[in-house]
Length: 92
Image (cartoon, rainbow, N blue to C red; front, side, top):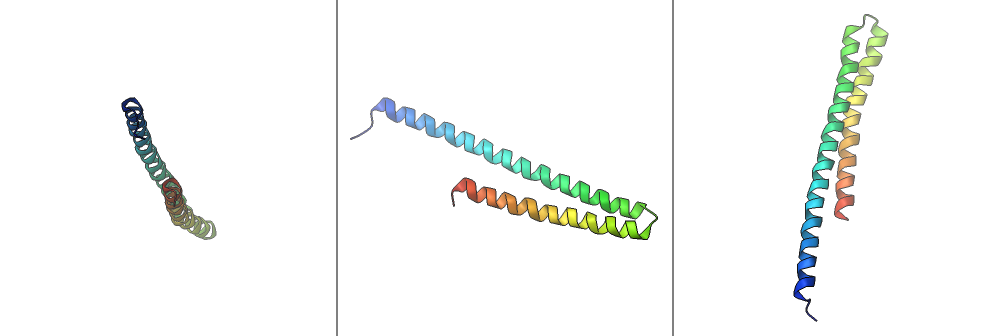
């Protein structure tokens, strides 16, 4: 049985609204990933900068390695999480 014209129009409008909301959610997720990448990069580079600033070689080495761990580990964590979120949103 075919849909009534009114029901078909309602379904079309609902689909358009859902598609717009999905696009908006996609942009919000992308902005969240970009902000997270910026945050871990700044923290990691800040620790590495402190390592160059300090005069104690032991503390400098610890801060240098911690900065690299936060920077590169943070990138890996954020990107893998973003990919997992993408798959979850797509239903795969």
